[in-house]
Amino acid sequence: MNRTTFNAIGGWQPFFFCVGMYVVALFFSIFVCSSIFYAFNAKSQAKAEKAIVVNTSAHQELASVSH
Image 1 (tube, rainbow, N blue to C red):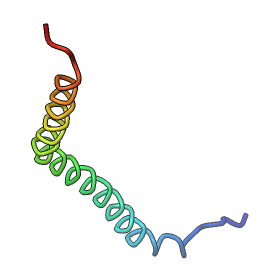
Image 2: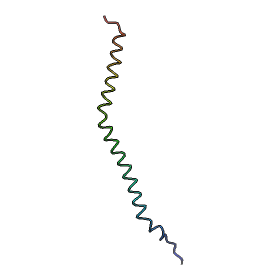
Image 3: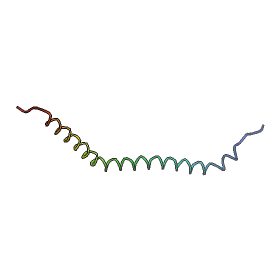
Image 4: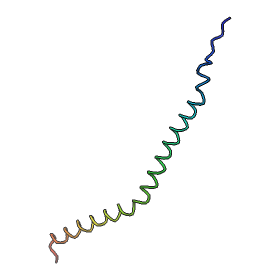
């Protein structure tokens, strides 16, 4: 009986493992860094949204008729 083995692929296993770990680490680092970035920039975005709301409400008050 002839046994078919994949000896050539076995030599590539450490390389594929390192490439796989690199891809997984890259994915998680992008996810973690973007989460931290948006956590710190949420305050400035909230200030910008608040300024827009204040300007919009001030504009509405100017257009309304007071009693």
